[in-house]
Length: 199
Image (cartoon, rainbow, N blue to C red; front, side):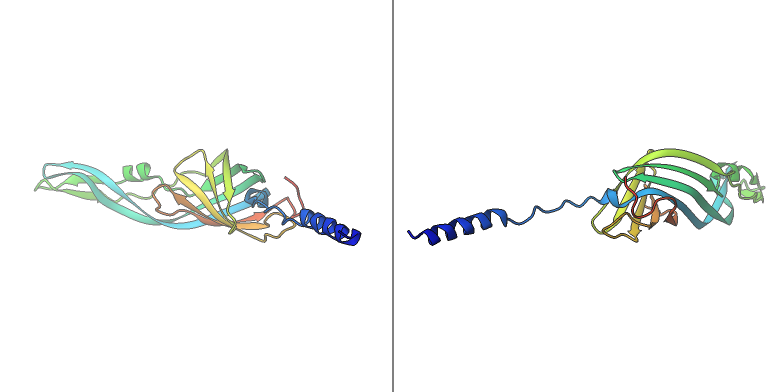
């Protein structure tokens, strides 16, 4: 075999060895959400309360009144870029069913049926602050979920402002209760971390 053919075969085999396709990059969604974000949510809620009555012809709950309130949450969430998060929030305007129910009064009529004598009023809890930790995940479509110690709700969100050089600059979220009855809708805006920050 001629020397130039041998050299060509060596060159082709070497090129093939070094031209293998690059390994597929694994999507690391949690790294897209890191830094401290200011969060806020506001939601109008229809609330109602009842009176627990006991008369000869009926014992149980009867409707007493209703109100439309505004629940709000403000605070911060810090995401570590590795799937862990810490939060510090304050809740405002949370409706208190038990205390509201206690404001209604009732009586029994001559036929042994209950009726409301005072419909009472809505009672809202004072502002409540809480701190805690949680975990989060981010999918390849930039949707994610944050779970905290309280299993009654999860925070579902969608990132925005994401690009290849850094984390998201903001996110929108919807807090869904465990019974899928809905929850708060709000936004998070990056507070003290630029898109160039590191985990």
